[in-house]
Length: 229
Ligand SMILES: CC(C)(COP(=O)(O)OP(=O)(O)OC[C@H]1O[C@@H](n2cnc3c(N)ncnc32)[C@H](O)[C@@H]1OP(=O)(O)O)[C@@H](O)C(=O)NCCC(=O)NCCS
Image (cartoon, rainbow, N blue to C red; front, side, top):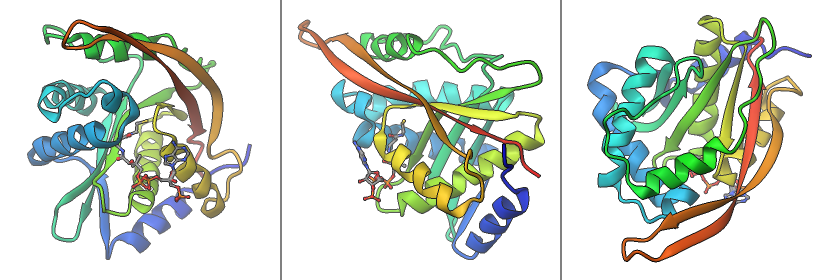
């Protein structure tokens, strides 16, 4: 397997610095990053859209997820030069999985959880350690392709520093696949990204008026190695 060059990752992030800053989240940015994730998911993520989840419903749940990832995994943000947050990515360590605890889960969250749980996580072999990219979003109108690509580079560098060997995601938004495929042209590693498997499962939920609904959803599991030079 060819390696992704950490110099290339760092070089691309440095080239982007006059325009965008990508780095670990700071404590004072937690609220803004959580709001961005909730707003963009409700606007553009297929499952949240189908279930008509509101940002008000999603924000407290995402806040717990962000806080958990800060402790056990990592959260990366992208900022513009005015310091505005335009992207966020949440990476969990599957060895310390997120649990919503006492949080009152609605039937919509249960439906998403049940769907994602049906899809197997990639198995880590001996010596491998996987990070799970659970949430990622870019503010609408902020050049999603570039910002998402830069966040993937920032995440790759940070995870690699912490001893993770791979990262993976369960992708419901096919726009992400398209962006990551394009990244392969710029990063000299054929195995930077690959779709491991594609799954079709039934999303089953009850609407507010009590009507039962279901819809077949496609989720791609993608993984990328973090074996940097
Ligand atoms: C994912 C995200 C960062 C992409 O940002 P973006 O570049 O602004 O998004 P776009 O809608 O322009 O999509 C990017 C590309 O994917 C393509 N695409 C979008 N939906 C697609 C679909 N259903 N099937 C195939 N391609 C699709 C677009 O055509 C575009 O390709 P192009 O550059 O060749 O035109 C943004 O949509 C987002 O923040 N979404 C909310 C959160 C979310 O869905 N997270 C991911 C959960 S898996």
